[in-house]
Amino acid sequence: MQLAHQRRIFQHGVGFQGSHEARAGQALGHGFCGLETKFLAPVPARLLASASSRSARCEPMPSNSSASASAVAASYDEVPYPSSSFPQTHPSRLAAMARLLGVPAPAPSTARVLELGCSDGGNLIPMAARSPGATFLGIDASNAQIAAGRSVVSALELSNIELRQQDILDFAPAEGRFDYIIAHGVYSWVPAPVREKILAIAAANLAPNGIAYVSYNAMPGSGIRLMLRDLAFFHARKITDPNGKARRARELLTTLAGPMAEDNLPHIVLFRQEFGYVERSPELYFRHDLMEEENHAFYFHEFVAAATRHQLQYVSEPSLWEILPTHLGAKARAALGKCEHWLDLEQQMDFLRFRSFRQTLLCHAAIPVRRQITAKAIKEFAFEAHFRGPAEGVDLTPGVPVKFTVDEASHFSTPQPFIKAAMQALSETPGQSIGYAALVEEASRRLPQSARAPGDKGRDEIALMNDLMQAVAAGMIEIHFAPLGPAPMVSDKPRASPLTRYQATNSDRVTNWVHAAIAMDPVPRHVIAACDGNRTIDDIFEVLLTAIADGRLSIADGAQSITDRKQLTDVLRPQISRIIADCTRLGLMG
Ligand SMILES: C[S@@+](CC[C@H](N)C(=O)[O-])C[C@H]1O[C@@H](n2cnc3c(N)ncnc32)[C@H](O)[C@@H]1O
Image (cartoon, rainbow, N blue to C red):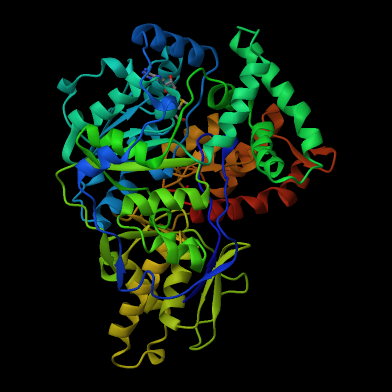
């Protein structure tokens, strides 16, 4: 398999998505993630603690905890920060990465899950709706956000989730053990005592083989944004009202963005990228992500040292590609090869990638983490594709290379029929994850019997394991603990879940089976909201006509609204089946 790719480092908040690109279009050689991918040896905990030299910026600050929590609550009560589903936090993903590295993380389907700083439960509620055998607790300081989340929980009649207004500082060890503890977009935005408490909770309340996920702004990439923030705070220093302060700061940044657009000095180029995110970010991200009083960034080694003080250890980031140097050039890889242990390797990669956000998985310090993986370990998992096949279809003829594409700069190609058939099957269902055995079965089914000689089966499977692992290492496939998705169904009355229909009715984002938030336009939203399993396509069309007549939905031909039934029958009716097929592919049905 030949790969070429480009990856993004995530940042927190929709407004700041997508940041520093790795080298575009770089071909990856075989072998790095072959049958014997080697990581570096783990380093003793003691060494990690002393490896950290905390800068003054990161020293614990004296803080009146209850006063600071009520200020936070007031800020988020006034301008709520609606949360969303973050696929990288899903226990299915966390369990898979942990197990790939030898940590026997608990089964997500029956897990106990805690989220700290859960906002309105936008991340936890879809998990709870799709995992009835698991239980979920989310806490947040903001009453308004918790109240908003509770109303969704009661509308969906979910009995396996509790959303609770509570200060993280007040969370007690007596709450018991959780298999997964999630803190997304919180650690960098709280004062030192709360940060310490997040790690203390992870230590005290994590089940023996449990996994904690903590995301934070990382250095060095966050340094540019922190400079912008310093500038914004200085400029708005005389304004005490947080909204006024944010408005003033945005004015300044918008004013400076103009002249910067024309200059190509190295520092301007760096600033310009940040200005772009800031300018595009909606008000609430600007206010909370950039202009909250608390906003701290950490070097990876500082975070690992803080975790080590709580007898926790680093496992990984949520995706394999993030912890491998495969996206870097050959010279950088050779230099990184000299690192003595993974802490140095990952810290140096953060510099080379100018990384600005990390989403770190932790487990108890006593658990052995295996930093060597073999391709055959891949058989344990289920796979979610991030690529599509060619528009003209997949030619399964032996020797004819077929290209599967992630985006302009990231793709892979293979001439092997069995691999092509497997990748084709994965590419058709990007909103689900397919287990290894089912994938092998499906690929075999797609190949004509005559195309496989006796003895091909074993060779095909070895090649598939190798190529799946390479694609995972390149970020083109994500691994899951188990398959996620509905059983195949053929019905003239399509059905979306109550969660999906609720989200489609009340927001422009719908969570799919692999926990990604899919943005939706009004027509697909109305279609999917009507898919209750009792309506035919004709019935759904009638529902859309009623929405158009009521003024809740509008269909236009250029500037002209269409309301005539005959015209809508020609224009809108044929779209419904296509929309349902798209929604099925994207993991929104069932
Ligand atoms: C930036 S928002 C992130 C929300 C959500 N996790 C997400 O990523 O969409 C930070 C959240 O942490 C909560 N928070 C901050 N300090 C807290 C504390 N001491 N106790 C409980 N919640 C806190 C805020 O109310 C807010 O909802």
